[in-house]
Amino acid sequence: MSRASGFAAAFAFALLVASAPAGADVMIAIGHGSFDPAKVKIEKGASVIFHNVQEMPGGHTVVADDGSWKSPPLALDGKFTKRFEQSGTVGFHIEQHPQVKGEIVVE
Image 1 (cartoon, one colour):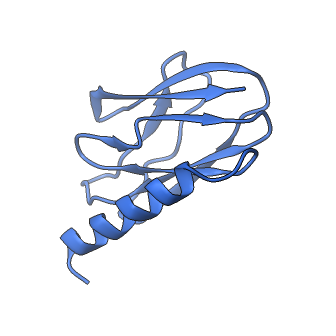
Image 2: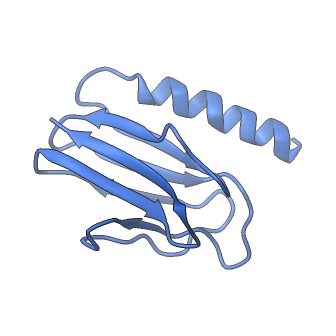
């Protein structure tokens, strides 16, 4: 499978999972210049799975804007799961690309 088709498959999977029923976990694909989707809504107790779909020397690291959590560096196809137990809005970004931002709304 080529990288382009792999990214397309991850994109399609992320869209499918992001629109999952209430209470379900959600997957966010990480690229060099984007999160896909960049904004998700989940219920308390659900998890967000961050999936790195593009190669980056040293990996991609996802960081909460408030510094409350941080993933390890994720190599190509690496995943990091974060469970959210409190309601609110959580901003996050890619440490290596700080202009790439996302948002999780926990209801």
